[in-house]
Length: 115
Image 1 (cartoon, rainbow, N blue to C red):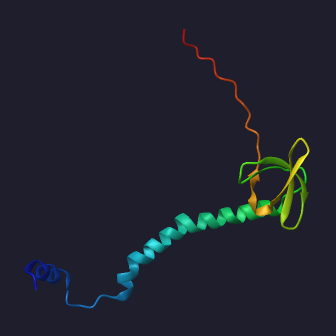
Image 2: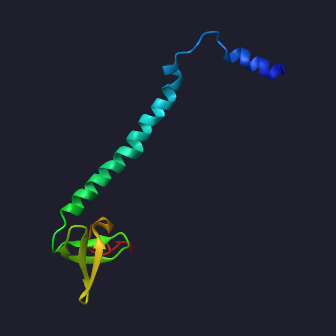
Image 3: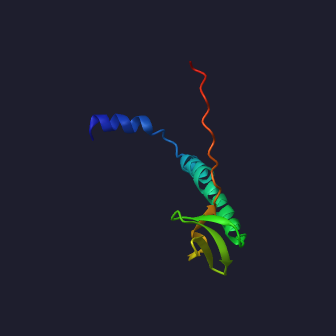
């Protein structure tokens, strides 16, 4: 055996068997962090989107995931018909409605007092 490998193994081997739970503790901690950072917020967002989709009603202004903005005309079991203007109506799946469309109001530019 190579002397460097022998020195490394002699330093890492403590002669006692480690508790298996302690050996997996870092992996368990990483899994808990992943749950709270990634999975839980994503599940909350999915639940909120599902609640929004089930509460859709005629007259709501919505935007689809492809960026089409329109007003809900008809809500069916799996689809929503939206009016996108000039009498053009589109049928889209409920799951493709991204959210409520809120018009952003233009704010007047502040006059700077530099003279």
